[in-house]
Image 1: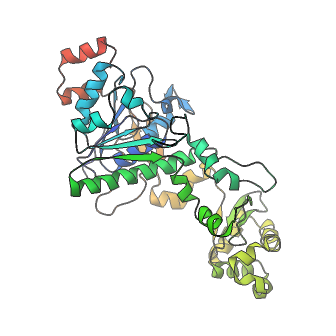
Image 2 (image 1 turned 90 degrees about the vertical axis):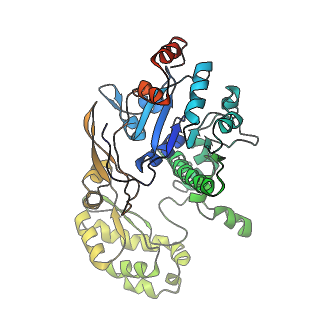
Image 3 (image 1 turned 180 degrees about the vertical axis):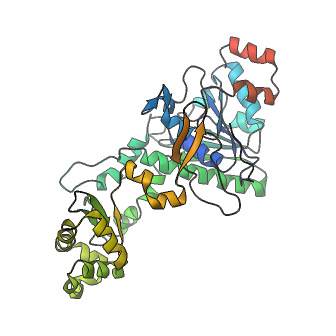
Length: 400
């Protein structure tokens, strides 16, 4: 493991990550990226499923290398007396515990808020579940996919005459992970004033609603239900994906009136700007067929390189539709070091997403990728004060 010598904003913060797949662990990763000491607690025989999720290399799960970065890994069976007692000892030294067990599970193990706060009154307990800690669905099993379905995301995604579309990645989980990191920092700020910890109740079905914008407000005030519109928007046009002469695709957006006007001049249809309906985004959206034809025909006659160059010269908004191969070589991402290289003892140099944002004075850093299952158990628990005899006894009891 390599440490950074740069002062980080969350240095001194200790986080226990008890969660799995994916929102809770991602929140812990975000905290670890900016200096928090994150201790990943996994079951001795049932490690975090992300270790086996998706492709692997030489038997090593690659998703875990990203999700487990900047975390020390230990094993504890929390359902055993020894595991419970050890977790409470760890919690007494921690600032934050993040968990995503079904409501009531920690309480069943005598590790609920009553026990954790008794061990450490300043503790922040972040509870991340599909549906929250109460309500008629609280005890149902759930994943981000259900949030994408329930929230209205799937209902507005896809072509008008096609089925609702779910994202092929953990969208709701990712949004909830970022929201959980924000919630934890908010609770820590409150603790700075009050000296007391509290519980964060994060339901994965909720943050994605914020990301979806004013749909509830539209419905409440106007009875408006947003339909599926494919790549088009009800708020502006032209807004779509268009195929170039060399078989590539580009995306065009005209959220600003000035951009819409520049696009129409660029594609040789300036007369459309004078149409009464061109003056607002919503009116333009109602004439998407006309605008898409104008833009699409122009783009179809040119290569991607020509299209991007012309749009840039015209100061109009365009981007290529990129897959991961393009992302890895994109000059803007390279300038930002968005995909950075990290050395890993198991697999060698790895390229992965960098920390989420840049701070000018106290930047975050990837100190190490995801560690092997239980790699730091003895070190962490020895630091906690457990003797070799106690570790042996815990192993014999199946708690480690």
